[in-house]
Image (cartoon, rainbow, N blue to C red; front, side, top):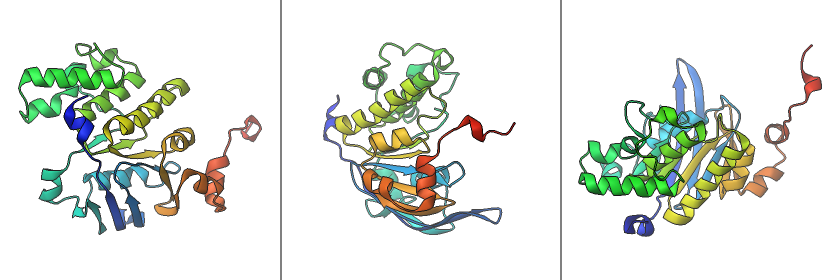
Length: 255
């Protein structure tokens, strides 16, 4: 691991009064959240609850109608945040470029911004791929990777930035249960290795309760509860319990 990885510190995130509407439809209703430096914070809820929209605001890809997002006390859209802190996002699709090799994808940020000589970029790419269990696959095409491998390559690409905050959008979607466990373990290992702050958006209950230091339940753009996983699991709100206890039963299917 590089010295930068070993010594870096995660950043804190504060969301206050966040509101967002699209075409007259309110998606986020005054969201308030605090994420501490170095913790894994999971935002959990059903599809269409506003999780991914919230995540895009936290990384600065969307501008709120009202409210603010602060990173270490500074507005996310400010030049100060962009200059001082390194933020990365792992998209639900992985978002690898098929025109580039896996290694080129992982090193893209460094090479595009000419931050390091090519020999150093190659070293960093190899290091990050090894961290996620993809060592030696630099020359592969993304089309040759399985879904889980693409997700891990996307994580390696984020890590090449030496981030202090990583945001994950549904990291286990479309993965088989075994690979979902592998991704969950990787999120935990990255916290231990790099002390990075992680915000994970997911409707995967197994992932949420296996990785979260704290979590928030969101429903129809409103936060229902925030706390330790055990406290959220015991919360008596019927909407929370309905989500946490929902099971597929064949007899409920229509004939």
